[in-house]
Amino acid sequence: MPQSSVATGIPPAAAQFVHSTYDKPMKMKRFTAWVTVGSLALVSLAGCNSTQRAERLCTDPLQPVLSQLQPGSHANLGIAVSAQDLARCTAEALGKLKGYREETTVNGQVRSHSQVNINPLKVHMVIMQHQENNLEEVILIEGFSFAKVAGKWLQATEDSPDPAIRGLLNLPKSFQTQFNPRLRAAGTDPAIRYTLVSTGTVLGQPVLVLEAKIATGTTTYVSRYYVNKDYVLLRSDAVNSDGTTTTSQLTELDKPQAISNPMLPPKS
Image (cartoon, rainbow, N blue to C red; front, side, top):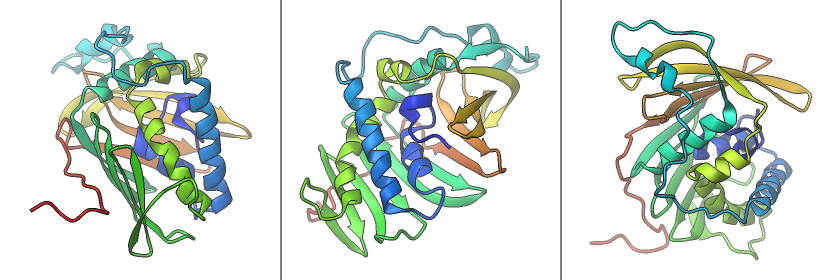
């Protein structure tokens, strides 16, 4: 599985966090290593502005086959596009949404579900699998990171005793990277190419289904994208060589999510 979507262009932000840390029973040192790698990748791209751009940077690499999403059309299977070009378009499309929900499953079992608002960034992630440090939920809001551990909310700070909690301070930048086409393209391997393998339907919307085989160290996996006519990545699958399938599914597209600071009393 990919250790960071900054490296390959997949998957969406919340799923990246889950893929990196929760696809197996979490080892804290592995989580800390992921945060460190993510931080280094972001530092190397720090010269780019992580705010949403008004200009359109997508080069429309799927334009020749977007007509295949119309009723009665026939798929031109086999067309290939650069993962870097695709990352630029999917990031730009995601960044235009007001908000969405995301659910991550491994072999059909739910591992996490999240609510995300794009601008300003707000994230509420619920982790379904028991963790060694009893981490249950994560909220990113107003530039702050909060963790629910063993039923109690606490704020992540530089002096938090748990390195995994301290690592949450890096997540806002990691999420913002997912919505920035320049950062996503800059951090995506240009050698990776996605091939159109079929068309389908996700959330009632027609989609193009594209696949790429990606090597990470000694393992390989198949990355599968389900992209609608606006380049929104409605679903992504990552199928390991051992058959393990991790799926990220978006719902409630372009709908702002109700997310609040867990340390403040509810608004009346």
